[in-house]
Length: 363
Image 1 (cartoon, rainbow, N blue to C red):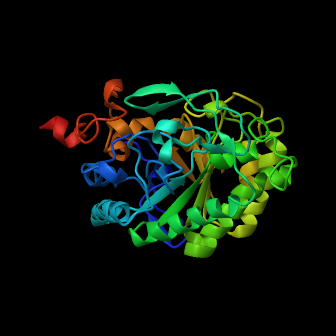
Image 2: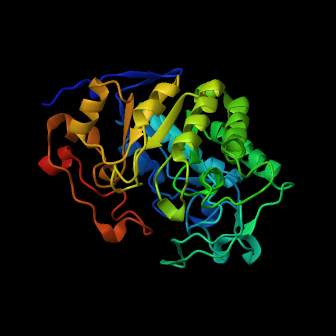
């Protein structure tokens, strides 16, 4: 059996984690009517509760925040109740779970927007990407720019979503500031061409992300607040002319807020780690809390980075889809189940809760 320090307990704020393995957020497009978590979600997450920390699939903070079909929300009583079933199941297995909260901004389509309205964004620039609606991938719709008067409402939606998450039993929340969604769109000048207080300078482009994080931390406590960042990822068509300056500033300000972690996508989301020059080690040193490293990690890479002090926790994404007992498989050096690509998005239990564990495979 392989034994390394990645399998040792870790203290995250007030939480004691069983190990340093994190299940990254994974969109699965399986929400039921009313965008309530799937009837299978409690089983899906509790199967994976041996991870030190589970971070849920991205969950919209409002109806406007939706960009893909059948992704769950956290803004109605029914959604809160549905998530409570999930958190209870995870806690019954001894697990810890954070809710990832998102607003997709321009990565949306009129068919999932209230009243068929245009998606919102920092500027009226269409995202050069596709979204999943009507059971297929389609081009995103042209967005409209948010007005200054609307922005406080966005901040409040995040704050209320965090309060709802605590009501649903989550141990904390992760603000989605990555992968080309709304907060990342504001931070990166390829998507943000505003000339007001939320555009132009490094400080102005960071303003919405920092206001949201501060509001969430004030609502539920900085010790229960994390954020995901992707400084150089081109996901969903975003680009930045100054990622190092932008994210050095953002992380300095996040550290001042005292939030419990930053969850950093190192490189292109789901792609190469060396997509663009960036000093991730320097970013880690700027932050006083926990650094969760993400993107392309396996046991050897995580172990090396842990021993070098380059990260505290390590997020694994796609391997958790097909391997509910990923932690046990990594410990044993066991072969991983292969993912069925046809069942990643949408559907029911198949390809969601029916992947075998080592124990089942041995029977």
